[in-house]
Image (cartoon, rainbow over all chains, first blue to last red; front, side):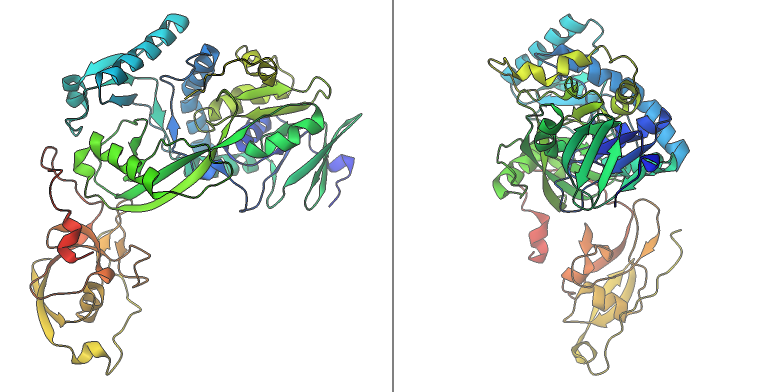
Length: 378
Length: 126
């Protein structure tokens, strides 16, 4: 289908995952007319495989603006969750009781302390505590004897990520966003008055275009003078049967969902576009989970999957507006849940002409042009 | 709503193996039942007229077997103290003590788990 200019939206968002739909929802809140092109079920869809953390502690080691940016999203998250509830009736089950990172030996504990104290020194306001085993057990009685300590930060939380994607889709459409499903953007043609996006099935025009296509951004960015050198990083996840509530706090590798399942994860592998699961990685994930919570040893696991994180060379996000073709933006990261509120409430206004949020200049892909040694983010 | 019952679509066929099978005595929610042996717990309970196997963890709605082949997890019951068993995947044996699965399963009290325990799963040869 070819749209005439009177039908054209103000903004085309390429990608309907957590990043694209959060940006589109925010754009609609700004009053923009928006069309979202979303790939079909053959898409890689990191948004349907993630762990659901709204996680802050430890992030941004080596690039502290990432910690500020992430935290600015976490503090806006209650407002986003409430808005989604009000506008769609979808409760995304946001809980922000603070999160734990368990340590199993002294060097892990020392490394954790170093990372968090460095971030606190750089950022000032950065609440966390290092806890010994007894202090952890006082808050989480179920931890096993192998846990010798933990870091705790009140900044962390979690959410039901599937409900989040559904809530964002419902909320953006309730605000008039047009969602084109089963449409893969293949080529972008910059023109004097804006952009023409050629999809598999149709052609779309708008004055602005936002690349939020996850791993697809790598191929799309050069059409509009942008650079998005993202690559897949595989994570594997296990989900248990539903069990009586025992854990309110999220941890980096074990959390209990709002509906009672226990999720286990936090593997990272560079295996290209292979999104299959492997027994040895899943066994290791399960073993680490049971080490933290021995009483889970007989809990049945129901499902397992792998998904591909959208990873830049240093692990941090990429936000840019094209210099050659103003009006073209790239928004890409591997923390679409944590950053959803920042994408809806801070990135969207920038795309519509507000000043760039002050953290964002640090996340231009230009940093890769003269990159030396890169420290992967966690 | 834990009081509502469900209506099963599964009925024993006349002359099928179950009809001729030896009856075995089991317990369901502390009630003695005589059920056909040689079949799954799910088939046995259905044959004995049980129509509410469990309550869902989120809304408490009543559930009964839906697929009878291990996929749907709607037939969960507690068998001999082991919670959340798939009734369709376990063969019924005489003397089994079966309870409806009321919501999410409990976890063992902390400190009770012994990492050297034989997995309880093997109690039923799974």
